Image (tube, rainbow, N blue to C red; front, top):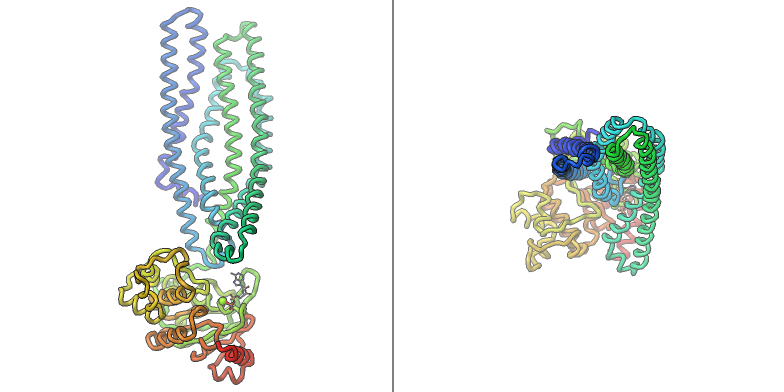
Length: 571
Ligand SMILES: Nc1ncnc2c1ncn2[C@@H]1O[C@H](COP(=O)(O)OP(=O)(O)OP(=O)(O)O)[C@@H](O)[C@H]1O
Ligand SMILES: [Mg+2]
């Protein structure tokens, strides 16, 4: 709750003014029937035109003033709710930035998109309702009741019959509606997932001529959403006739019983008329309360989903870290490290020592947890057991910023952003000069192809770098990582799309120009790691062996088999 209240910062005045204006509007509205009854009971029978005009004038003035307050309250409520939503959205977005990889594994991207859009809009509407109608309805109901009781106490008994029906209807809508609306929002997630997956993978979809399949997948997600929406809305819609029936029945009962009281001389015509107006106002406000409940039910689901994101604790936190220390050198140690994704154990009892400045190769069959192993170094995930040390210190002792600045990682699934090549490279170091950028690109063997583009470093990259080849993208990502001037550089299969000659040039440039950086190279090709200081052979989440190329060729069967098969294939 406190998290939601924080979002009102700067909008408190509007949040308070909106209901105040509403109350003024209602107060004036409630006076109108009283003036009306005066016209009917005193001015009309005595045919006093001046009095009729005077009361008429008062009624117009009251109506106009109440209109002004109504408009003001609408305006204030809009400002407050739009401001609230925008802050909530920003807060959610900032929260997402704090998420670790493990947090991101828990929520699907599509679901996060729905939470940031549809759910925030729902809460915005609910908030608007809360500060307008939630004040208007009870205030109007209470004061209209007081006015009605003042006019005639016995007629008020009609409500004792109407109220339980209205309450029961509202309760049914709330209890049955919540799961249905929740289901509807989950269907939104599936629909968004289908759109998002299709858009990100549109090239693969086309390459496999799967457009029809994708269209039918979308159509079925859309039909599912339609069906759950109908189920949810049906409930609300079927409650409406019950409410209007109760309202009209009450009006008829008042007119009938009131008419009999007039005949008996206990009530005047004017009183019955204003009584009828108050009854209308009371019933309308009850209707509004029912509507608010429906909207709150809908938004409760959204509030919960947003709350889940806001209260999600980042699994990687640096609250207990010492903000003043940074890794002093590039040594990496794994001490009896085990690691699991959620419930699946992938690394078991890994022990490694990598001295600063070494070039280390990691090799192993696909799925042997090579990527999982190196992701523990910059704390993209935290080890489940054991301790990972960088520069001699437990990685959890460093704040995330200095640690990740010291460890540059080129992810297996690397990403470039829309913008120029230069802008993308500056991610590594926002203050890098043109010479530094060019030097990093030369080391990564990217300089040549960049300068061959007509616009060179100012060539615009589309989203995800789609206008570059796979190997060009990989080399840009290496240059971007080098610009960070890291102590440790991790290349996770980062030269898989680069030809062997270029691959070898990148490695010798790294050795000659960046010899002080600890470089960890994950590769499928033995050629990419054979000149490393030590090679780690991983198999099924365990370190099978470590040694130099020659040592491993002699004693390790997995390594020898990989080498021989690759030499035979001419890799
Ligand atoms: N985010 C994740 N959530 C759950 N399990 C995962 C996740 N990422 C990887 N895994 C699992 O962890 C195991 C190791 O995966 P990992 O990506 O570390 O292998 P790898 O050796 O890098 O493979 P490759 O050579 O294909 O890149 C696999 O069985 C995989 O299914
Ligand atoms: Mg991998």
